[in-house]
Image 1 (tube, each protein chain N blue to C red):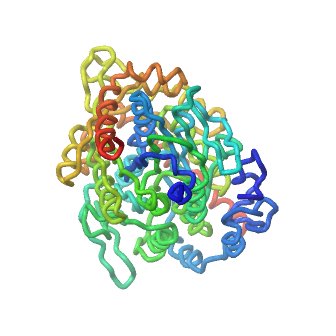
Image 2 (spheres, chains in turn cyan, brown):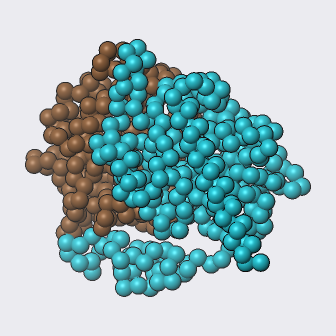
Image 3 (cartoon, helix red, strand yellow):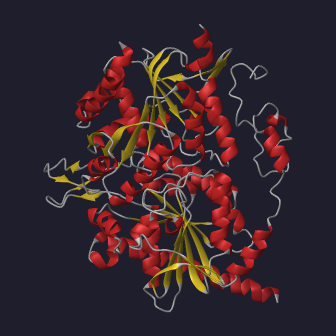
Length: 329
Length: 271
């Protein structure tokens, strides 16, 4: 640290980013503890798996990532119910992929905890919840509920690659990817591995408080950085109606205007707000869809509206893509 | 003096506590902050090290976002949050040019910064150093535990919310502690209930009792339930004088009790 300038924090100033051609070579890299690592890695060498994944993903029509910078805002609950909602149309095949390697909650929320993944000639078979709804998660590969996945980045990335390349997904209309919080290995890997296959976009989940929005803005910046389109933002846990006196309270108060203001400022669509409903958490614990448990709740109708908007977005994308493909032919 | 040299910048630190949870959004940062306030209330000097590199929330909670970290001969000077300098903080939030900048780093880079955070921050004399972590059992956790091992941390406080989905992740975190030889001080159940400010009806938003049951099942101490207190959340968000506000919060008795249990643990060594 001797050569660092006094008074200046040496870290991210002018860092060209690990995937840049300048990685490890820029002036700002001098003295950085990772200089050698970045320089040696160079710009991300193209992984042959990306091509294999592209082949596999040709029969997957829509790919949606569910993201949030913040943990515990409801990514997995949303992913699971987006899958349930889309699978209500029996003509559609829906797949849900959980890439939260250290905290896989999807098996529990989908009511398939303790299931095993079977190996067949064409790869790992996902676990089917319904005929047209299948799930893959690291949770199915663990020996028990106490089993921890204590892995550093490269091992997690290898697992994600396997999920995309080696799972026998079959023909799918919607692939929903549930992610862990943050902007690190898992996020970079999923975007990188799907870089040659088209991703429709990301749905970003937040809660109303500034503490959460602060992390979510970082996630939005991440999307811009990796050129991932944003379908929109969902504000979860927005207000709670007391079951006794029916008066609404803000448990996570939107002191800076909540997701609505953030979306206006950043010019992103707000897909909807979902109120806090204790029954949602309970349904998730029991592995039931709250669509069938509480069909009349305001949270359910809000969820349904959001899902419809996502369907419309994907439909629109699809037809535009078809048009441009026809134009090229 | 030899010992001082070995411990470097952590030489003056009495006890190191880690705040962990497999699950995100259960209140690790809130509990870290509140625990720091409670220990400070008990007359202790506290430092907080925020190793959540992709989602640093503590600067915002303590209203010191936008402050910058300075360099001196022996390392980085942490940011003091009050005039008495009784709480100091180090976070990647202070190193970002813009608060919305995303830290898009893979493991090795995160590990390098964590090592620097542990060796290069000039904490001075502290009774407690609280280390707030991101969710999971991956790079940040492995690196933090490995780098702190030589300083013999007092142990980890595990935070959970009462629902089964959260408990599941915390069970995995307990396995992480066992595998890495990190002592578990106990489990805190956060967001244990919400008292309607209008009719005083208590609703268990995220179910109830899961944390206590888990502690019993795992054979580790249960430190207590902390209720959801929107007023405290709000005062933390709005930057009112939280040191003044904190003792008025409905969460305060629970936190003071947790802090006391931690102090009791340290007393045989301390006196």
